[in-house]
Amino acid sequence: MSTTETQPAGVDNTISTTPSGRGGADSNPTLLLAFAAVYLIWGSTFLAIRIGDESFPPLLVAGIRHLTFGLIAFPILLWKTKTRPTWAEWRSTIVTGFLLLAVGNGGVCLAEERVPSGIAALLVATISLWMVIIDWLRPNGARPVSRVIVGLVLGFSGLALLVGPKELGGSGRIDPVGVAILGVGSFAWACGSIYAKHGQMPSSPLLGSAMQSLTGGAILWIAGGVTGEIRSLHLATVSTRSWTAVVYLICFGSMIGFSSYLYILKHSTATRVATYAFVNPIVALFLGWLLLHEAITLRTILASAVILAAVLLVITAPRRPDSKTSIASEPKIIETAEA
Image (cartoon, one colour):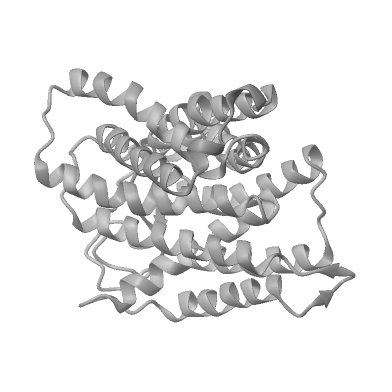
């Protein structure tokens, strides 16, 4: 899961972006490299999680990643921004760190012991669907436009296709427990994103990300202790392959990937930025097939087509005419935390 989530179209009261890059700016080499980093690196993190799970207990894969990033980034950003987070900001980052990183990303790491990495990425893409529902049902929430409602129906039909009927296209269904874990994780991520929108977050998105990584990583380590994962961790048995995957998650997924996302968020349009939610699952499915020999069955193809069509409908749907933002036809972006 990435740190900054796409807010589905038709949902009001969000933090909207105003792109500073127009026209030809979207074709400059730095911007193209940043897009490539977000597409490929964030798409590849699902593969890295799967490899990390081979030797590390799953909650500690996420715990090591986020706590390490937080311990490195927080003091640097604290010094650079010259700010001192308030208790209200710490409280907000504790809540979002728990929902986004501990439950959301930790859930992905748990689920990838049961489901292929490409399927995990596909199910994580449904976060945009959950966000529509949560923002709709909250007090004074906004009803989504009809096109988004069609996307919701399609998206959850794709989820049902993954877990049943028992046989389809000569392949068994995806592990329902793994799908349930990813569903809970995606729901928690959506809740955390909505909370981050209304909570008192640090003015610096990078500092907020580092604070969430600290709190979320600490919670994951506590959970690892309670569940016995820390006792079961024997560093001597961890393969070089799994260590490489965890280092990749820290350096590329958390540092380079997030920095690239902030760059494209500032220099491109919201619609183009939102495409990462559509591209990442495709990259993850391909890498899982190519490098881990994960099967791409008829069931997977059909479910992928249905779910990604639903996500595309949601992230490209126009907003309601009474929106007070200046970019009437763009989906909105919520800035949350790096996952």
